Amino acid sequence: MKIGLTGGLASGKSTVSRQLANAGLVVVDADELVADLYRNGQPGAAVVRDLLGQELLDSEGAVDRPRLAAKVFADTDALERLEQRIHPLVREMFAKIAAAVSSPIVLEGTLLVEAGYAPDFDLIVTVEAVPETRLERAVARGLSRQEAQARLAAQSDSELRRRAAHRILHNDGSLEELQEQVDELVELIRKGPEVLRS
Image (cartoon, rainbow, N blue to C red; front, side):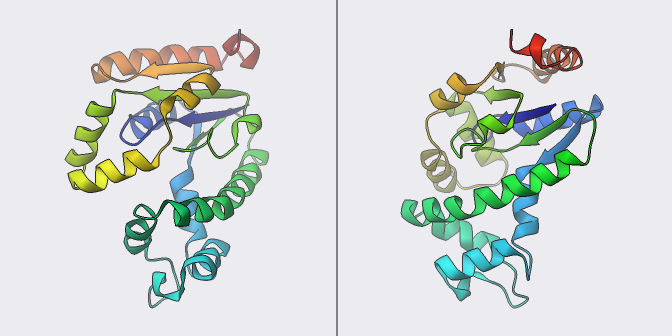
């Protein structure tokens, strides 16, 4: 059983991922797959070099992620071109990982729905919080207010995620309230996709 976990910047996806992992589910972070793809000699590094230039690679030949982020979050065309090339590579990596496990597996990623991953999953779960809360959380994590606003603006409206989701977890309250929702979700996952989607 494959589960897609999504939500916008600072919505609480990583917290839910940890809670799911603590419950015994296999959780894969799409950002970590991208980080692997951006290492020296990997196909993601070649994509960045070919699309955006050698100057976005470091002296080792890996992608300079802060420099890449600064470029693409200020240039929506560059971001779209990069995503069109990177998303298929991430999907391929996750499919290989999922094929090797027999238990439910979760892929956490911000743009799973927007990138067309939804048909790959038995279940889509989105974590949602109001934009003001997400902005403050992103700033508290170390982004400048301007960087956080740019990243929020670069992400599509959450309505698309909500429409695609089979389950919505609301993260405007306490950690305990979020944990209660996750506990209920885990119980349903263990019953199988037919129960979840009913």
